[in-house]
Length: 138
Image (cartoon, rainbow, N blue to C red; front, side, top):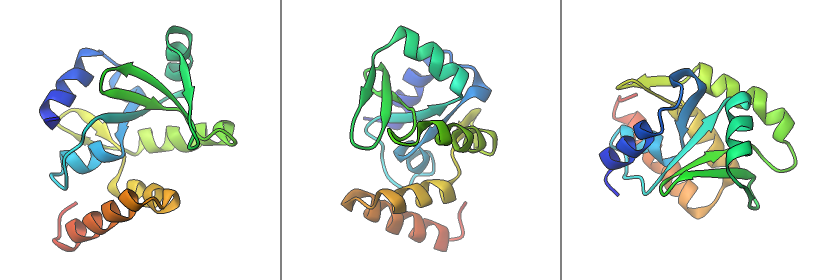
């Protein structure tokens, strides 16, 4: 899906600007590193609690998530460490890069997360991030 359409969908949710940040492939897409097929976001614990009341929480092997729309999901921390993850999530939101009025988790943080996940697609993204950074871009 075209990144601009994903951003339009995100903006239509009218989320409070300082309470969320785009993570994963959206961070790469906004910098032109690769296209994103959907958008994952992280939110403050307070906003998570609001969404949790309004939407079903899904679990997978990586953690909790809530689907907000056809192409946007909120990541809610790891299953075994969700309590600990809220502090980390708040830091990522607080220190996120602001690009065209939207917060994006720092590229260095996305790289760390992808290294921890270690899936084939994550390793590919790490190489793309490294190539991007070697070119002198941020």
